[in-house]
Amino acid sequence: MRKIWFLLLLILLLVVAFNAERIGRHYYPFPHQEMIFYYAHRHNLDPYLLAALIKTESNFRVDAESSRGALGLMQIMPDTSRWIAEQLGREEFDPRQLTDPEINLMFGSWYLAHLFEEFGHDPILVLAAYNGGRGNVHAWLRDARWTGEAKTLEQIPFPETRQFVRKVLLNYRIYNFLYRN
Image 1 (tube, rainbow, N blue to C red):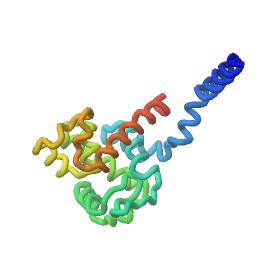
Image 2 (cartoon, rainbow, N blue to C red; image 1 turned 135 degrees about the horizontal axis):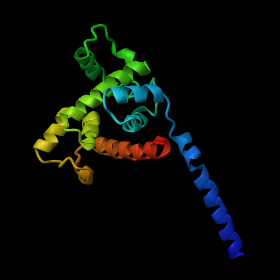
Image 3 (cartoon, rainbow, N blue to C red; image 1 turned 45 degrees about the horizontal axis):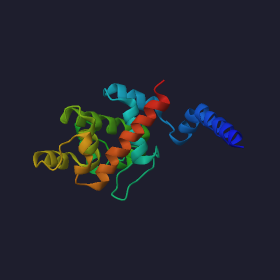
């Protein structure tokens, strides 16, 4: 009887192993892949990190709006979007345009690349700044409230930012596994 249970368990494990990628892609879809790769390439970003951030922020919902007013795929705040529009020389901009995936990806990927420049290309600091604010991350580092290292994520003063960084890093590993090849 034990041999039968062992054999059934082995068969079940093999079925799951052979279908893991298909099952994973069901729960971790990659819509807007072409645009994500385009803007990632344009701004020298890892497209799988961009996908992981979008999965975490909006679950790829173009019409997503947070309780604080962040909009679109990359959940960009209206004030931040106005600043980005100014940096990009876009005079005729309305934050409601952030529900357009192309504009959201254009603005969000530019901003993410800007954060990479500002924080010395450190993805942990960049993700914390993306969620918790650039000024806050600079203050945490300056005041030694956080070392800025992945091994000290528990030191991040904002629980939401701490969870955000962890979740994006997990989603990044998953997107790498499912889509890299």
